[in-house]
Length: 421
Image (cartoon, rainbow, N blue to C red; front, side, top):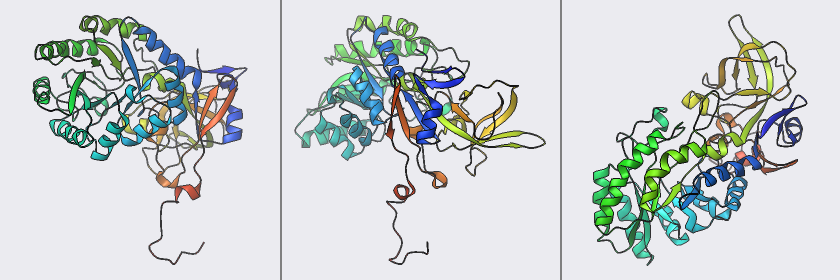
């Protein structure tokens, strides 16, 4: 299903008119398709049906509780990177034995919380981290299950900020260091090696880099088996790309066909950590045109959303398609679509062609279901926008718009004397 499409010239999410949503909740606002979230999960689930597998949705892509609940009810586990995400996953009903915990800087409190919850395993990124897990597990009289994150040193060609599988990145350990850490763990009574993990980065279009990395780690798994370390899980990470504009990523089936063959003989449960693949094209950022500013050199379409609502263009130079909510036709014009924040980097597109847009029009910034709301900030004292989840012909607000009172609720004056209103 195409979750966002024009019907009688008006853009809809499933069966809901987005103009009607804007009237009720205002703009800017994030809108998600429940059907699209579930369909993307099921697509990946079916693609890996030939091997035992567990899909742990990556909460960092979109951690809204309703989104997490939707995917947990569909059968997903959760990939987390913080104590806050652990709290959210459990609150959304996730089975602790389907939660994996990644990240290079896990605090003692976060590790303790995860041990007490009984998560499936930690993704260990350094020797000191494993030592900390072992010490805390010993205190709690439990066992910390872990998988070492191994950097296979495979180039992916993605933006340098979202490449994670190279030896120069802060993530994981090289193969030799990982092997040594597994061996060292044999002397630790409060931890158990249950898997191996890799993660190459984000927005990878094809299976080839994964297949190359898996081939390098298969040898490690076999060597560990000869040492008496019988692993149960092979975690291939996430990062599977989506189409933002004219990209042509592998389908779930093509992706699976490229990586299952080297994994199948191992007999391990394959763990996948998709985030963007599931949420990215399941959501949009709905915004309204405030002004159309014409100068001798450019035309600026100034909208009420800003870089703090969708930072990807400013941070990565990312391109998001921009679609008018009302398709009235008309000649295209070349414009910059910009926000109101006092930064030159506050733009969504530069030099793009859009159909005729006017003050008061609604436009949709597409593919904003991942790494949009979750990376939002209140820069320029801008309250966080609402999030809306659509299901069929109904929708509900799953995060209310932040008020000014809520925005400043945690701040206090330096003395009892208040300034004038």
